Amino acid sequence: MDRPIRVLVAKPGLDGHDRGAKVIARALRDAGMEVIYTGLRQTPEQIVNAAIQEDVDVIAASILSGAHATLLPRISALLKKEDAEDILFVAGGVIPEDDIPELIEKGIKAVFTPGTPTTVTVKFIEENVRK
Amino acid sequence: MDLIDQLKEGNKRAAAKLITLVENKMPGYEEVLKEVHKLSGNAYVVGVTGPPGSGKSTLTDKLVKSLRKSGKNIAIIAVDPTSPFTGGSILGDRIRMNDLNLDPGVFIRSMGTRGHLGGLSESTRAAVKILDVMGSEYIFIETVGVGQSEVEIVKNADTTLMVLVPGLGDDIQAIKAGIMEIGDVFIINKSDLDGANRTKREVEMMLDLSHYERRPRVVMAVAMDNKGIDEVVEAVQEHHDFLVTSGQYHQNRAVTARDEILEIIQVQTMKNVLENPEMNKELESLTRQVALRKMDPYTAGKYILDNIQG
Image (tube, rainbow over the protein chains, first blue to last red):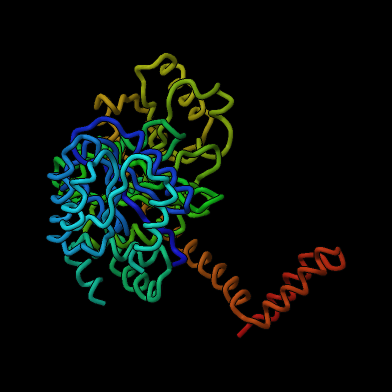
């Protein structure tokens, strides 16, 4: 693909810490992607709405608050409702291993937990984005 | 052309997809632009430009909120720079416009410059046309943070807002050529900071020395606190009325159309050279000769131009 991959880096919910989101935004930028960052405290509705207007290929949600089991499936459901399931939806942050299978089942394509090298995330996106 | 039909009905998804299509020059993009051009020309385009961190996004956010009270449909195109090294970018203007996100009468699209100089991206003009056909009554274009010479916005906007902040330099900066000449309205933002009055005075002095048919208004504002916003809206309206009554509105649009044609000639000529294998070979050999100083670039360029007809 010769056009840049467009990624929405999103912070759903109420945590106020976006260092991780900024690190990943920067890593994706350095991998040649166009990263749209929307800032802290976004609702699932805001995230999906922005993703559609920006026509992104990927949503990368960073979540540290513990509300992942509620907020992430809600984003999946909205993408489905908007007929936008072709957008690759990945998540990262403090998410217990035990919670991951359920998230994957609900449409989150990958979950990157603390310590994951950014190169792994970049590679996953490059290999799985819609062609 | 079913995306265009959807676009005409105001479908945002269709607009988003069409912008992607033209931005990436995907197959069929020229056909889309041909179609869209004829249907566009109804929206009023406001350019917002100024140095990095002067508050362009915040000001745009507040202006749009104010205009939304009258029920106007509004689109925003926010341009941020693309890395010249990796081709990547971080488009962060939406951060300041979060409340607008869920307003059904607002559409926001971020664009990377993708190597284009001048403060906009190559596809900004195309995106404006698409959003125009979608039914936007106002389209705001927020440029990248500009330095001294990124003046392309004037060719794309009906009214250009120049956003300045206190403390960026003395009055000599204000009389230099370039971006200071392109404002239709000057906004001294963050005017609660020290030196705001001085900045205003310097801009006024610069305007004293200029020859304008209509002197641009200088407005003090604190966009973050919603101060001065009504005045800016009023100033935009004034400038709009001036353009219409003086006939400049149509004159400006004619200049833009001419520019657009010339730009296409330029791009197409380059394409004709680069996409023709024989011409490409010719170019290679001329390149060597010019590099070795056996030929000058003017003669080489003329040779190519004389030989690409047809």
